[in-house]
Image (cartoon, rainbow, N blue to C red; front, side, top):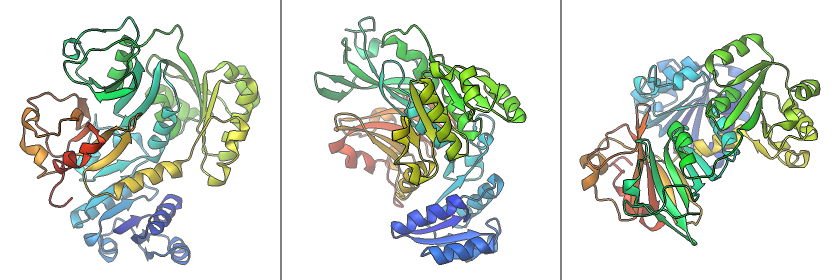
Length: 447
């Protein structure tokens, strides 16, 4: 593949190295001549010096023939403009990294659509989602987040007080929630309208994050108290993590040392307690009784501070401890220090970048426990067969179900009379043996 990387900072250099390891043809552009000289010496890439937002530089980088263009400079505005220009010039797929949450908030303005960029990527948000997967919701057995966290897959165990012995079609499910699979007596299958639930069934709920959070109590046992969560560091990762945990299962306290940032966090996270304090100091952790917390997550920008804060929390008795750890050479020691989960932004980024190398409709693929059923997140592209039928007439294979669709920020469970439109994303459940048949409905002549 021919790939253009715009920006040769820490992230851009690491992405270029990753792509070289997978034997792709890589061109790197950076405005700083020292960066391009260094990357030319260290990696087997073509490096150009110039501004990523100048058309002449992009032409020189040959974005016209690029399969993928990744804009990962340190400035959001340059990433948006350069990725948009690359798309207009002929790059098949464009991805722009953004730092500010406003650029990914489609409720006010859809920057992705306006600039014709295939994906806006926030490393901080992805890292927060990875940390969120480390939380085990009461009663849940697994959790995944799709569509940048807007669609949640939650596995719960049905209790005796739930709506059992009633066909699923008669359950009053919210419009944003669907029961995807049922696991019973060692067997898993895709749920149908006539299926009944029984006590101790394990089911997957799929839908919009807030609807899932409200609805899962209907199936699983009640809990007396909310889980206590302390987050150290109010940067973008800490912000995104707190935002994901604001529902009533968690009592979230976020500690940040900078006064101006605390003011922003207090205005942006009304359901989170914001404390101006240095969470890397033991006296602060003792004063805030972090040792009594269920979860302590450290998201500052300094690995050493993150690890030391985790060690202190472990000594104080915190139940579950997790941290962002940037340096790969720390990976072998974090487990010995009482850290239950260490999230590497580089590993998170690698997973995302490698998924982009498939130019077809597949965004992500997750295998459910049992090894027979997969969750696919798919793009709906112009000209795909799936856009030519109402769902009731769509020739899906028997063991395949479209369980959620997202378009322009809105997530819902599609009905029989819906038709998928180009630009939408869908979540499907499919048995492994029928994946190829399903994918043909989403592929175009360019896939």
